[in-house]
Amino acid sequence: MAESPPVDQELLRQLAQGNETAFRALYERYQGPLYRFALHMSGNSATAEEVTQEVFMLLIKNPQGYEPEKGSIAGYLFGTARNLTRRITQRSQRDLSMDEECDVEGAAFASNLDILEELSNAELLDVLRKAVLALPEQYREVVVLCDLEELSYADAAVLLECAPGTVASRLHRARTMLRTKLSVQKCLKSIHNPKAV
Image 1 (cartoon, one colour):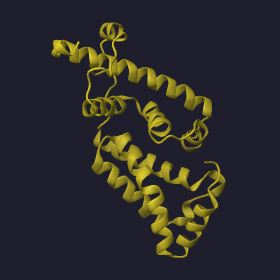
Image 2 (tube, rainbow, N blue to C red; image 1 turned 90 degrees about the horizontal axis):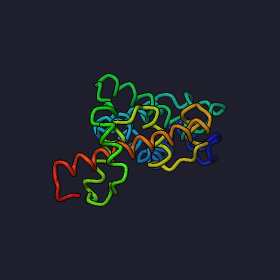
Image 3 (tube, rainbow, N blue to C red; image 1 turned 90 degrees about the vertical axis):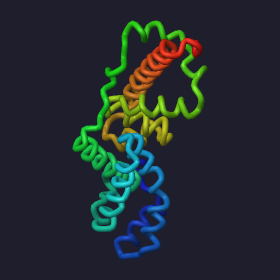
């Protein structure tokens, strides 16, 4: 992501000249990934819609705000979405604590359970979404970027302004936290529904 594809650069140049078709092409290219990123980071579809709309409004108002020496256009758009999502999330104080449902003794017991065994796809997606939302922001970001948006460590590092090794280490820690969280969920489900074991 260090350098923008030539097509993105050309579209941004045309957008700066007022070309609506260029804007539409950039919008179609990045709207979905930006929306998903904001949705996974906030857990709220209204926030994701607001962030996505605001990113493109800022791009229309100031296409010269993008500085090529700082990274790619995609990195610029995701960085803007990241900052807007943070601001909105902090304002609404919707961050969840990872410790809310964590039980250390239960985690040790649950580590041997197959957490996917009894969950339907809908249940699994809901539990996974809640577990990702419960991660602290720095871990949630790497999960969303690397696991959900399938960016490389290098691309995520550019966007997050850190080293690829830092991304790898945060992702490893985030996956461990998710495994623990999901194991505890499975354990809690087994306690509430003995037939699930």
